[in-house]
Amino acid sequence: MGRLSTSWKLMKQSWAVLRGDKELMVFPIVSAIASLVVVASFMVPVVLAVMSTNRGAAVQTGSTDVPLWVYPVMFVFYVVLAIVTIYCNSALMGAAMVRLRGGDPTLADGFGYANRHLPQILGWALISATVGMVLRSIQQRSGLVGRLVVGLIGAAWQFVTYFVVPVLIFEDAGPVQAVKRSALIVRQRWGEQIAGTVGIGFVSGLLSLIGVGLIAGGAAAGVATRSAVLGAGLVVLGVVYLVALTIVTQAMQGIYNTALYRFATEGTGGGVFSDADLAGTFRTKDGRVPPIVPPYGHGPMTPGPPGASDPRGPLPGEIRPQ
Image (tube, rainbow, N blue to C red; front, side, top):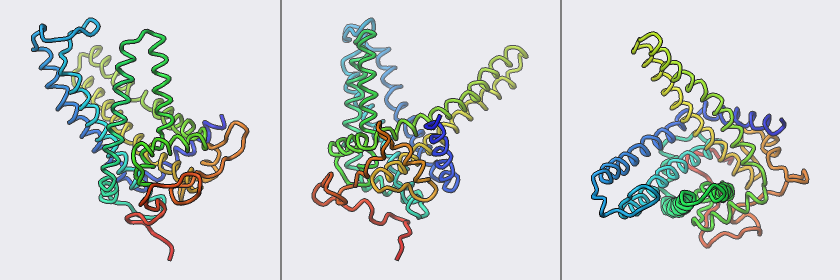
């Protein structure tokens, strides 16, 4: 109950930031639109081509004939989709950090921050897509036990790479170094991502039932009353509700992750976020609060690479005391 209560408070604090900077929702909107374009650009031609391909030029995979050329195309698809998602998430986190440091972020601030770290984003997208595709391929070829094991490996990978994106953009680290840094932060600050992600995800899941109910109710009403207008109206309303809920949830998750990273590396969540609530998510098994994991250049724990910039330097739009 204590962790759920803390998660609820942090979710409300994330909502308070989003309510004050509604333009932060533009980043997940752009991500969703761009992702749909990528899916349509890759999947539609691939599906049509596979359907019309001579079965003699295919390889046997399970019970489905899949042409060999599909695999490299799907890998490129995973990489491009990862680039879009990570790029927009980086822009969201960059803008959120400006707000947490007292500034008034603009869309240009967020996208500009992602653009300045595009090489790191591309590198991490390549690693992320490769790991994801390998795990998915192994899982599809495994039995029940194998799928469970691969699922656990995938969950562990997501766990240790939780802070990769903020490390990439706030510490100018390369993708490999960012994975190591993220794993260090997770190990030192055990439990933060479980509390926050479960809280936001759990509440979002409950709220999504409203949209599911509208869609199901619309289908039932259309059949019962034979009114296509009523049924279609409720279905459209449910779909719009679910899309809006997803956008808001993704924006809040990005804001929360940014505050969480800042607290883990600087000891403060900034402004709207309560340091006491954030500290409550960082308890270790023995109940103590571990020390801060300083960013590059702020302690002997993890020396930064040559030329690494100070992540606590001014950000675009930031208000700094004189």
